[in-house]
Image (spheres, rainbow, N blue to C red):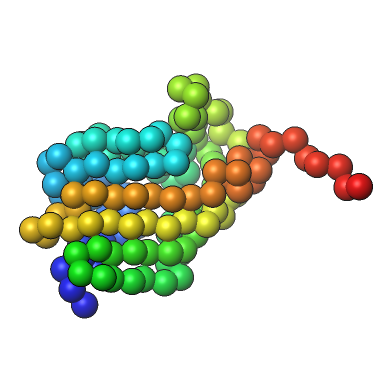
Length: 144
């Protein structure tokens, strides 16, 4: 296992523990994460805060890893993000969704570039439509 995987493993451990400080230490000071819901989030502290808001919205959130890959200084983790929405969730529109009490399990993939033992660029992908549907925010389609 190379350095990229080691750093991603540290990141996943910090996420599981909901440890904002340890999570921040996985990123370079000027790191950037691209997210489907908030676009670009720049800087170690802003990235840690981004994840912290998910933990507030779903205190029991966990990442179910299905596969991990590494190619040079890039680590990839595929899996599911699962949890119960018991806290307010920030929306891409700038608004806030009150807690729905619904459980979600959404496909996810994280791709991170690591340099000098820190994540410098992170692309987080998750199925927004699947998330919105599981939160009950999409109209049900009638069967035809």
